[in-house]
Length: 374
Image (tube, rainbow, N blue to C red; front, side, top):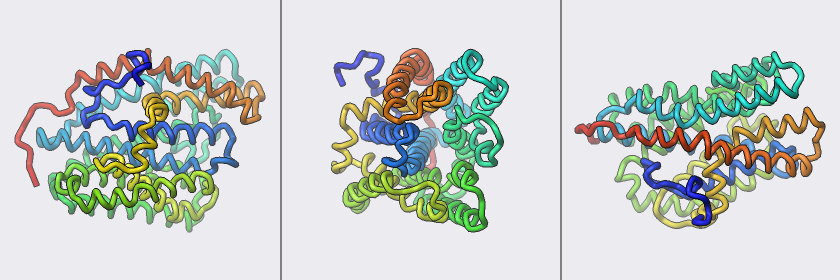
């Protein structure tokens, strides 16, 4: 990693929770699988959709951990600081991609009005609901459904977490409450499945992704308590479950089918829990086989730029596929993957990094205050 230019190297001061290369490596691996699936390598990696729930669990864990770090220091989660930091991290790169797509659509694509409509939907973080209810529009920016799910959840989660902290406090009962809420949402998805809801509704709705997000939140709350994080039993359990969880997710990626309604009826929860166990193992100190795999420098590098890779790959692949008639996966990958990496690196260098530096100047901790301890 020392061979990388300075602007691609990690800055430890940028990570309020401390830098964990294993999580970056896991992100990079999952992003590669998603790219492969969108190249129409579905025959090889039909279960790549499982890794979206992994992203939701990881994101929820990290965001909850940041909110609790602020809570422990100040007695509040810092709504303004949280939302402003999120905006600086997420909005610039997303809006740069959307702007570039609108210009490309104007110059090269038919149905410019339809493309501007989907751009507006992507810019307002509502793509998941237009997809869930199958609103007719082009699909060049369809991948922003997952960004919409996260953004909608994080609009309300700091408020909910604050209320729960004030009522219950930072204790195991809070973890239990969040897990019960997650199971309730999993049950809601199962009910929708058996009532005949469309696959689009079951895949894209914020509510039907809530179990993965809340399980990640529960992990964040649990890891914020020293007696849990330092527990020999917890560390041993994570060590034992790390490799089986990794194997389950790897096998699922090559065997599961998102068109199988049993996945939405409850089976997907198994893979969500496997993701949770794997992430827990990576954030705890005991070394496991997944630690060594996901700390591989190439995977860590991919994880560093995975936001840009995810943002840019879908419109690039679809412009090449639909505008130039390139459908063969290997040829599409030979053209689209290098273009995606160039776009992601440019995004990191000229869009994300400057705004990240601005974000870093906003302290997550706020003014120190005697926070309630439980």
